[in-house]
Amino acid sequence: MTQKQTFQNNILNLINRDKYLFEYDVNANRNEINTIISSSKFLILGGAGTIGQAVTKAIFKQNPSKLHIVDISENNLVELVRDIRSSFGYINGDFKTFALDIGSIEYDAFIAADGNYDYVLNLSALKHVRSEEDPFTLMRMINVNIINTKKTIEQSIEKGVKKYFCVSTDKATDPVNMMGASKRILELFLFQKSKDITISTARFANVAFSDGSLLFSFDQRIKKQQPIVAPNDIKRYFITPKESGELCLMSCLLGDNRDVFFPKQNENLNLISFADIAINCIKNLGYKPYLCKDENEARQLVKSLPQKGKWPYLLTKSDTTGEKDVEEFFTKNEILDLETYKTIGIIKNDLDITLDDKLDAFSNSIQKLKEKKSWTKDEITTIFHTILPNFNHKETGVFLDHKM
Image 1 (cartoon, rainbow, N blue to C red):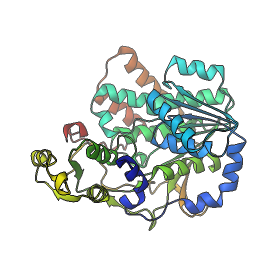
Image 2: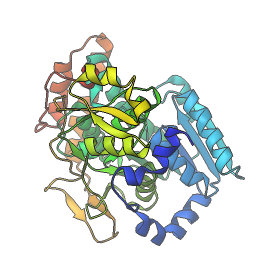
Image 3: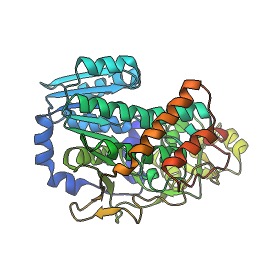
């Protein structure tokens, strides 16, 4: 068994949990979910990412009449198909994958040629805070998280799609970084379009061992015979890839218009530090954790310690831009439904047409920056503040690219 498989098969233990979060509600609604899936046509955008794969597999297993997957990563799509064929085989429905950029003309042509879907699930996103370090990647984040979403909703409306789902994040709750702010603005665009199509979304915590995450890097460091590094002063909530897929499907298939689903905070959803997970990962592979005093020591000792049954790790203080002190799924001003489900809460939203002009002005301002092919981070931040006047951007000048 590979190290990757070992981590994936022991995720619950690694994040100090012994049961899945949403099993009760998923089982209670399984018949309705399966009935909807088996008679429906689905388009999944960003379907080869960690969350996308979880959603794709859950839908595939219930024999949908149509399941099309779009993702920018050709390699991830190939692996997704091989994974599905090796695990589940085939379905009678129309299952295809398309290596397309959602923002491209080719994607627009793809939708124009078909576009016949009941449900569109948009799971594509730039999710890393490091994307705001330079103004160019920041603009791409806006394109992916906001502009492409707006476009694909409008295409869904034109094609008569029944329901549009787009994943959000807990970091959209009182955001302190541009990524979280982009997702909060995304939510507002979703609600704006909800007068023309049924919309729902979900906020959830960090997805354990998702591609590109810090936990994913633990796996990569071990594979590459490198020391593990983790902050010792940050605790986060974690859900598994399976749980992320379940929450997305529950919201998409059962959520009312403008609903935001989120995990209820209970004894099964516990805060855990990155440091504790790093230690758990090392122990999971049969090594004893060895705490190093600095980067140089860690890099040197990894050459010899594993042969002695130990693995070097380093703990650091978190000082990167956009780190929230606490994680939260809702604000005190949002209306909550905590009765419908046992393990899932719902934020209920009304249609606010007073935001229409501001959202249109936001789109126009971003477009003008793109047309002149020159912009600064400060210009973009100013535009964000027109939509989110209370946006408390936490800027330290330090990003993950600056650290080991």
